[in-house]
Length: 276
Image 1 (tube, one colour):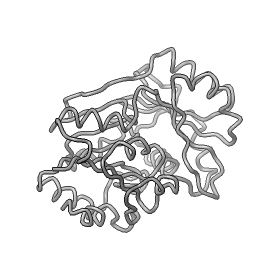
Image 2 (tube, helix red, strand yellow):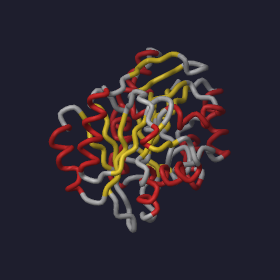
Image 3 (cartoon, helix red, strand yellow):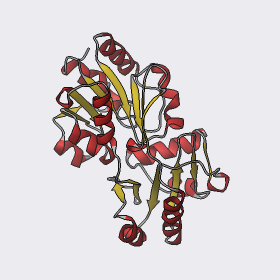
Image 4 (tube, helix red, strand yellow):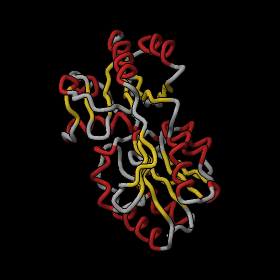
């Protein structure tokens, strides 16, 4: 039996989409029927990954590792670690002082700076995270204005800006407690895009928690991803797969390169690895 961990945007689905290719759905069903367990492993919060749960998984690592759940109804919570209110307020204060666009993510929803949509529209084709937010905003997937934030515990802050100098103070003051995960952004997009998350968790720590829960060896795990927020997952699993549409840096570290998500990459990789 293998435990299989799947990133969503750029891996299971096209960035920002909520419907996987039919080939991927069939591959997942066949793999689970063979006794393998399959988990979503995503930076999305539970609210934004809900449309995918109808396809039935064995659990999920969400919020980049900050909220981990397993079980048929995803009701067994293995980990739940939001940042404190003080940490959230300090992060936003520093970033906003330097004109950085922010979204904050809780279990039940997301809130973004009111002018974030205009900023994203100004960018060309970028990485999977930019495309996710572009489509999320245009599809009204529950991202509400920051002015409507209801105080729910926040697990991560997504950041977008034009120049690294805008992040210097935040990195200087916050890097003791938080990781700054910056993505590769391909031309013609010109922005810096990334996430700020606690050093207490990541996708890799989520993988370890699930393995401990099922008393399953890490060597018998496989992880699929496409961007640098998948790095710790790829470093933790026994065998790592990067999508051909993914980060060049991540491809260098992966054990295998799968075809792009747009070319039935997940299903073809499952077949090659004899998971179906």
